[in-house]
Image (cartoon, one colour):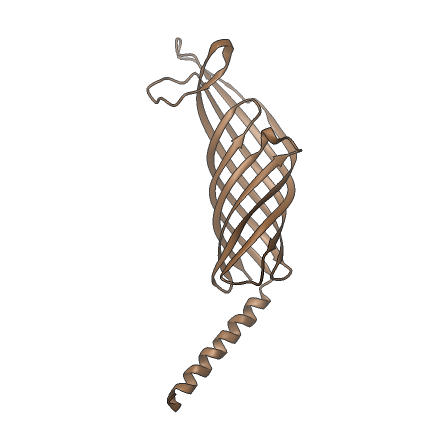
Length: 206
């Protein structure tokens, strides 16, 4: 190798050492993103809605991270009334709905992440934790004959939850990663009221 190239090689090695040292010093992270959540309910088929979330955490080493997160999902679904007042999902836009159900869910969580192997560009993990969910359901009844609207506030509930899932971080900088994962939230062991989320976002380490 010509002698003139040695300074360039030395500079690149020095920058690489700085990046590795800086990566080892990144102990905190903050981030957010979005995705889709499917809301389950023992009494209604609520379907899927858009999810937004943010998180803050502490990384203890390459494998273990603890985070606090807040996630929000909102769904709205139209129904017609069947025999006996049963709600039937209405998918035909030409049919006037008789009932509209809207629900918002807020999940506040504490979560432990276990990453497999050393921190590399692709870093898979599993997760588990617990927290609380707050749900509010609003039912709106439409009288198609008189054109009147009757809105009921419905229920407002707060329950403890546990969560589990998995995913991966992909680092395109030593302190910036793309995150993609799936998660289940189960309230108080009641599988019928669970939430399923598919999520992607960005995490910044500092």
